[in-house]
Image (cartoon, rainbow, N blue to C red):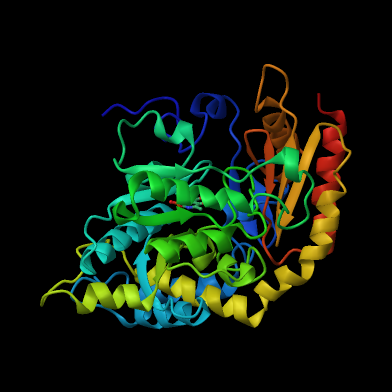
Length: 438
Ligand SMILES: Cc1ncc(COP(=O)(O)O)c(C=O)c1O
């Protein structure tokens, strides 16, 4: 094959405006702690923990060493009908910090795979307990559950769905919970919106409970702009699922591993689902890995109820990969030894005050926060939605701050090792730039 002249042509970038990016590339070449270094040698303060994932900061030496060590000892071993010790050790460590009763761990390689795995386990469970008519899956508008066919079917983002045909059939959606008119500038969980969980009763009445296998929601929706659950909403959803025999799945790909000030959002918010999906912070993003924590009774129904042989016809070549498992074990050690979940909880009030100081700045129509996450919603530019936030993203990057924007919402989720001075820098920079942005 003839090599093309353009060295950037071959990489088809994910979720990126490829043509615009390749006109004006932004490249990161190294990372340490709270900062990236850009290809032109600038330090960029990481306001997003990469992509909601490097919760312990970048290039932590104990994680790097753990990966190096295992790479030289056991590059790969299958976990189909054979195994190696690391995923057993890791599963026990994860189980120990999951909510009571969710102690069976299935490994994947990403959040998307965790979501599709969770949906499949819910379906297999309903069938194993003799409720095989329960095949319907319920997601939520503005949900982001990754990009597998299961995830985009239950997810609620039109752009992620419309190019891809009919998707899974037998899916319905709850309404999203975002209501600025009622809840603008809420600190923590907004007061209004618990009634939106009752929409599940409407869906049950419409389809019949005996057709519904599972409901999946993000306890806090990150990717669609930091949507914080209204007070009482998740509790109500839990009640309705229990009443109707529906499996409740929390997609905690962003919220697990410290983001909200505890091991899981379930722990922080006091609502326990039946299945939790995770990825991202599990390995501090140093090696791709996801996992699904499953209620023991669900696991036992599927596994103990099966005929001899394989009980669940599902898994990935790299489920429990040695490098990922080693990275995850070292990451969990760091979280424990540095008390990073508690650190997030302790810093949260300072973070809250800082981000809410942006109220009153130009274009800001809402600020919301929970744990070490904030959403700053800007008024869309008339006739040009998303442009204002994208310009802010570029200006921040050019002046040494990485933020994430989705629509006209700025999402902040820095590594949990941050200091108060980093918070001041982030919020100060955003405030200054908003004043000069059209
Ligand atoms: C809640 C949630 N679920 C699933 C995913 C998909 O994860 P991945 O990109 O690792 O497949 C994400 C990614 O941001 C997410 O936020």
